[in-house]
Image 1 (cartoon, one colour):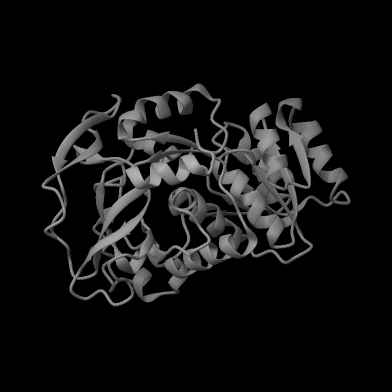
Image 2 (tube, one colour; image 1 turned 90 degrees about the horizontal axis):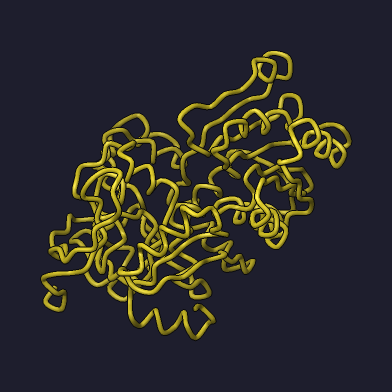
Length: 364
């Protein structure tokens, strides 16, 4: 690793409920046998980053932020066989599953629930808001040639989260999915994924920007939640033969979002809860009298994530990004995110060469 500088720029959480600190810190040098060292090209801001800053996730400090990263492999661990120097990689979030527990020995799509893993990048371990990062090769994925770094980085969490939710929904082409929070970072990807899967997509949001983005992302029907629960439910029933959605995915933290998601779901249907508000409140009638099955969903597995990336390449899925150039611009990104005016995903273009590429493609 002779070409790796001893120091690198990074954005750290150094104190809870305070802005990120932009510091020069030692570059990572120690690789476990299955690890990859990435030169970070693009890193993205996620809702969970705010939870980390607030101290909700029990993060050891200081910690380099962001669990949505994509970069180029510059070094590999001694046991790595599926990656080589120069590969383009979407960073896996999980680090060093134990490999022995019931979850690790179970179905591949559930192994990320391992409770004995070393940790999660940007949450309990150093993440992607840095010039270099260490990732677990067993959890990471090759980026297809047609997929850019600034698309791949947001997919590292937002993409695999909504993709995992759609996999849990288990829908077939021609069935209906409602996405509550359809115009956010996860929601607009969900709209595109679902349309490309042949589903009828109903997007619900409560912001003008969100409704516009959901429509632009392929939602067949958009419904403004600001008109109230009764009218929103009525509108969904109108487009589903008074049955409701075959499955609903909730990616909104709004207080009443989970209850609304259940109310628009058909009897015996699944509501996939992805949003992470402090409490999820649902009337008992949804469970008892309508038999709505509520499933939590975290992220997708490495195999599912690779399928997602290939699907993105095959169907031309795009991420609505708001690019900022250089780690020093993180305060501008967080200001936009906190304003409530962020449509899609905010990304930091970390690498200078990638800055040039993004600007050529039309980034500001």
